[in-house]
Amino acid sequence: MRWLPFEYAVRNVGRSRLRLLASVGGSALVVALVLAAGGFVRGMERSLTRSGDDRNVVLLGAGSEESTERSQIAANIPHLVAAAVPGLRQRLGVAYVSPEIHLAMLVRLAPDDPRERSAVLRGVTPAAFLVYPQVRIVAGRPPRPGYYELMVGQLAATRLGVSADQLAVGRSLWFDDRAWTITGRFEAPRTVMDAEVWVPLSDLQLATRRDTLSCVVVTLDRAEFEDLDVFCKQRLDLELVAIREADYYAALLRFYRPVRGLVWATAALIALGGLFGGLNTMYAAFAARVRELGALQTLGFSRTALVVSFLQESLLTSAAGGLLAAVAAVALLDGLAVRFSMGAFALLIDAPVLAGGLAAGAALAIAGILPPLWRCLRLPIVEALRVS
Amino acid sequence: MRRVDSLVFLLTFLGLSLAGGCDRGPRDASSTPAAKPAPPATQLPAGLFLDAEPPGAMNVADVKRDPPVTGEVVLRGRIGGQKEPIVAGRAVFMIADMRLPVCGVGKQACCDTPWDYCCESPETKLANTATIQVVDADGHPLKVELGKVHGLAPQKEVVVRGTIARRDDAGVLIVTASGIWIKP
Image 1 (cartoon, each protein chain N blue to C red):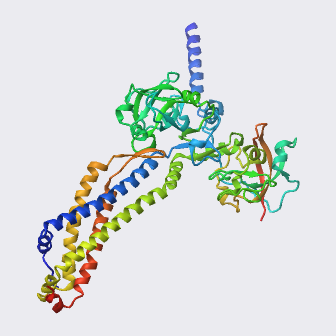
Image 2 (cartoon, rainbow over the protein chains, first blue to last red; image 1 turned 45 degrees about the vertical axis):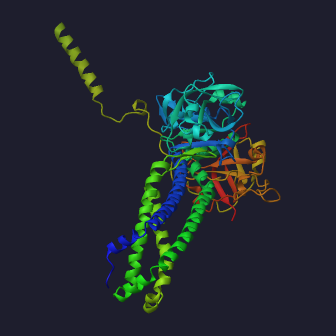
């Protein structure tokens, strides 16, 4: 079989600059949309999966396994667990047992600020830095109990919908009718903690007028998860359940599956719209090339060779648009913070997302050219040559 | 002569010291460093699962309220009390009083796990649930997956013969089982 040379497809791509620009631009937009959707889904997945450590176990109230914010457990449970369950991780005699309060609270930037913003607060003790080694203080210092101090995560500003300098060290947040000084900023990349506000546990208990905890997070050493499960099932009076931290966030990821599905569905619908619009353009473009197709067939090139050549044209255009979209996505979208109910996360444009976006562009290029091409090639050669 | 006596004394002293230090006999337990506790046994005791129902079974709530003086007890219950009432990898499970109907039976349905009694108040659950364990000689729960053995599963009716390992006014009741009968 004789094939059309690749240069033929390349020269045809540049035949009409206006059409080339439109095709490349359209392809770039569709691929950019797919990359944005993929980056959103991957960023959310990464945030929730990296938030869970395989060695951490969360003890929370029975019946509240789906949300630590709904859980309430007695304040003496950390001591009971540390005493009753041997084999928890320790460093210099300090057990990796972190009592915590998790809640969403409305805060203001100033006492006269008319707008209240929802912040995710976590009441912690210094043990939190043991059980969460991925948390690092990047500015300032940890807050001290009794001084109405707190520290914010790197994405806390995104969560609150304010600029980063409004949450700089030395500024304040207002809640419980008082100012809380920001003494530090921490990072916990690609985890939900990155968007949180950390407050000394005792101060948060006072502010919220509660003497209970939301949960206790422990890190295993020689102990196994089953040892904590046994503890919870033996001490029925404490009304506790044990769940691996990784499993807790995996369940949250499943909870957000409809959101991810909706994002993909939206991207697919818009891509389909782009496809049908492209089809319309392609039909018009091929109508002007029917005689060219007939002439090539009289020269001995088979329909298969023509299909391959026109696919090369379409894929070249799509690849150009896809590359532009990939560069723009990496430059503008990767790391972009997005708010959601649990806090905030950063879009993630990594290799799988890029591959998926480029593959989607290629698939649309193929799907967009085959119907009009087939319509033109169906004509007998004599009729094709007669078309004016 | 005095020099000879001193020499004999010195040699005797040295000899006795060397004899004591060179003793290679087995060490007694008091001189060994603290031994690591033996890992729990992974085999269930023979005859744990009974072919016939033990007589004299009592309800969970009754035993919690008024335990037998001897500590020996035969307990009837339904496996449940939490979403996962059987500990994976340990011979420990929870049972609830048979008189407490599971959720969905004449009351609010409770998702996919009616045996967790989430439709009941915490006080009711505490008063009607107990913990059953099978332990080794050191009192540690055996590392056995009971859920895969002899059809032990949530909502199964069981009768457990054993001794009360712990009971207190806070609502804890832990029974160390010596025999388990599962209703077919």
